[in-house]
Length: 258
Image 1 (cartoon, rainbow, N blue to C red):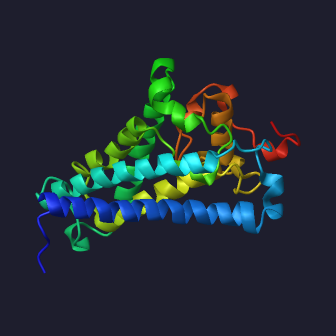
Image 2: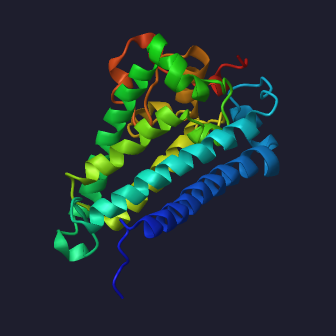
């Protein structure tokens, strides 16, 4: 069955609605699952791993969900536009796994994650310049104590900047459709884990040969407390080149909340 012409206004609108439902559904599913597990169903089990013991602001979750829904709409519009580009042959996304070797599937994912980390880190640092911060990034940092719902709580300008990377990457990097889906899922999981305000990784994982390269809730909680350092999303390879003060110390080892 041939696909419809996604560039036609009606089909483009239908596509935006479908992609929006998927994106906002993924947000509420993953953020809601993490919030339920760590804050509703088993809060006592994770109490010692809680990073901040200050109360959340009144209506914070409602505000975060509102901004995240707007972000999901922006992602949907960009996603529908990317689908049009794919249909017209402008992207390097492929659906037949035999178009490239099997080993290219994990390699392309690794390349995409490293490039996304680089884009995100330096974009994030740029957004912390005072003049830019007030306009673009303040909405996100209104959540001083983060929650799973903070993950996509962005001002529309930041949401647009966040949404542009993957479509631009797909213009140049061959990626199987399933690799794109995995990349988006990892992005959502990482963002939710980073904003959980509960450190879910093992006690000394940040010293492990693997763990020292991964971003966790402690990194990002310190970022939201200090408004500087720890700008990463997935990995610490940019963070590890910064000054010692920027290095994270898991709060659950410190015996006192901030």
